[in-house]
View (cartoon, rainbow, N blue to C red):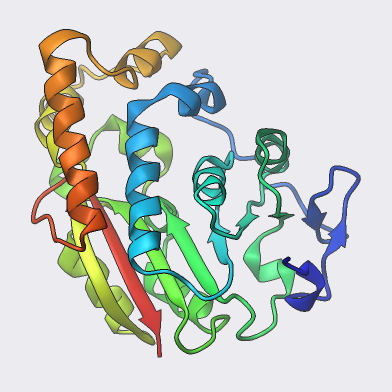
Length: 276
């Protein structure tokens, strides 16, 4: 059982059962379009595959103690890890997203920026950072500051979008600062206080679709503002042979990651590092 008071004296419990700081200012993150992302996360093959990859790597590198997920959004990853038997604390500064996580069933939620939460040094036993680092201006300093909150031997699980060559209007709309190569991501962690235990690309089957359906149209000015219809279509597994091939390829990718094998190409990067 996680006692939130053991990791910070600044946090108080709200009527929603969510811990926050007395003077918390809502981040009020707003999506760049009107798509119903909490609903899309429920059926999206992209989110489902992502969560399976994360659950597999956590089983491969099991943490001692809970995982503190920084920037947990609507709770998609936290809930998946929780359902897989892992203790998770979801940390999300946007009030609506924190409340959505609670409604979904995430047990432990902190609605605060990690800087204001006042976490004790060494109190975050393990950290998860899933598609968050690309939003941070000074990514190296951010990782360094998070590392200072971890004990020696704690695991850091991280995922980011890959390859600046895949940049599109989607990245602009999402507020990304960059995409990464696996080498760049490893270099950031190795330059702070971490030893990389595992690194791999994933979402290899989506490389060409992203390039031809997002990157090139964006470069030509043909990629317009996302609509709910487009979001639903892109996150729905294709029917027929195409869907079967994609589903099989993604399943093989999960098996590859679960066995600790490395993929050398993909549209996202996955890394596990250990504090030392």
